[in-house]
Length: 307
Image (cartoon, rainbow, N blue to C red; front, side):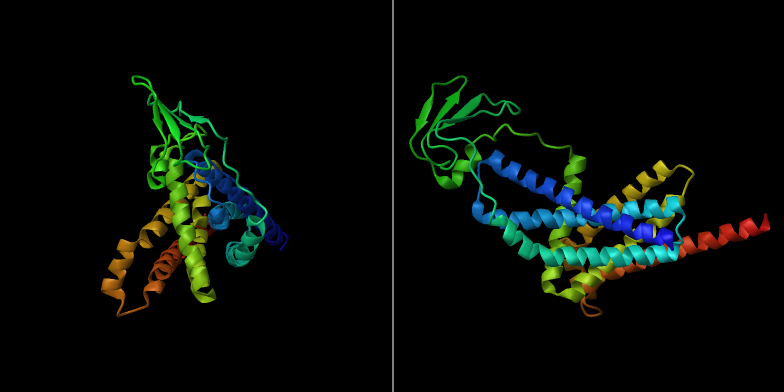
């Protein structure tokens, strides 16, 4: 019983810590993109803040389950109570966090001010993408379509008094702040963003669709507990579990894509609700993995008794 309590405390602390840290990092990344593009929009701050929190919420859900599985395997917690405990905590924490995001986002967004970087005469020349061109914004970044001076390496300086605002952002070099991350990390961030947006839509539809989808996802993720005991090397098991979770995240983005949803509507709409197809796939896959784990447990127990 003490191990189960420790598992619950461990799961809650990991979830809260990962949620706060990942949401903060994601929001800073969004602010950095705004700064690099010189398109700071105070009216969009609340939306982006909630989007960052949703992204961090899904990241925390995945990572806290991985860490919970590690704790269960390392501390030899009985599988069935551990699975139930993690499933209940994951659902409760995810729904509770989603419930508070809307109001909390509005409260925080009103206290955050956005300021354009620099002032009149700001010179933009990105050294990480050398094009031989620099742009001097005479009116500053608050008016990217205003007067400017374009400096080229092989041509005289060009003065432009006005510029169409709709084309201004596309011709201004990116501010030299930060670099693009490797594609591996960007692909994970994109899939997390798509999955977080889908989960937010389900939350707006109502409690039942949200809990059905999230519950099915949690069932599938926790079913990978057997990977933590797959070999004698815990670190190798951990990385294998991370790869399995990455596969689930990719599968989630694929199944929720418009093309796959259109395929489901074409062939399955007359048999069952479309919103239930993806949760059903997750549940069936999770139950098959639970059955596999149970059969492996029975086989090992039988071999142990014979020895």
